[in-house]
Structures are given as C-alpha cells and as structure tokens.
Image (tube, rainbow, N blue to C red; front, side, top):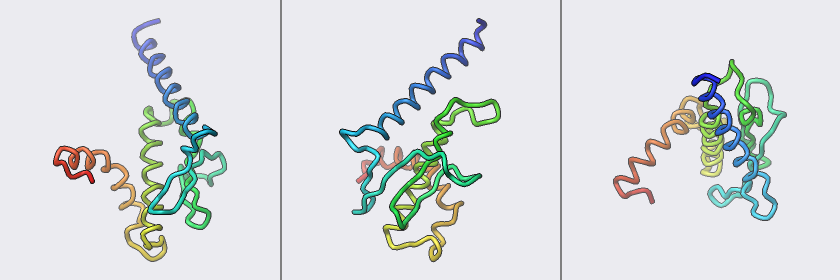
Length: 140
C-alpha cells in the first residue's frame, strides 16, 4: 500500500469508529440518550432511512421527533462529502435549532427565524460562537 492508500484506510477506520459511537449512543437501552429535553419538552432523536428525497434531517413539532438520515453515518462514497460526521453533526444541530424555535413559540410557518438560511447559519457557526463565549467566560 502506498501512503495515500494508508491514509484513506486510516480515515475510513476513524470514520467507522465515529459512526459506531453515535449509533451506540442513539441505541443504548439503559441510558436513553436518544431522548433530549428541549426547553422542557422531550424530543426523540432517531436515525431514519425513510426521509423524503433531498432531506438529510427533519424536525416534527407534532410528534416531537428529530430525524437524521442514517445514510450520513454509512461509509463515504466518492460523490459524497468526505467528512460526513462533521456534516451529520451540523444536520443534527440544524434540526435541534428548529425544535428550539418551535418550543420558544416561534412556529415554522409564522417566523422568519425558521428560514433555512438562518437555521443553517446558526448550526454552522454555533461551534465557533461557543468557543468565543467560553473564552469570554459567558457560556451560561
């Protein structure tokens, strides 16, 4: 094996380990980590193969379920993003933000904040904002 092939193999092994870790966290029976309290309302986080075409995630405010496409945690294909775990994390943050907005009384059909551009921006920038707030000592 050449260096590129070794590097790809190492990345694939690391990716599989990350995927297995998330799937285990979502499937543990003794500690239901697939349940999350969002502003006093319990939501269920599920990996789903049944999302409509083009959706990587969705939040259902009526059933209190956040779904993330399970294929994001499968082995990367040449046509897909190479760091699917980072993308999947962004998708989960994105859907969680929709749930937070819903539980704040800002329903999707009445609030400009639910626009996909706004929610995407928050989901992508949150890790950076968190670091800034931690450095300032104002994370709470």
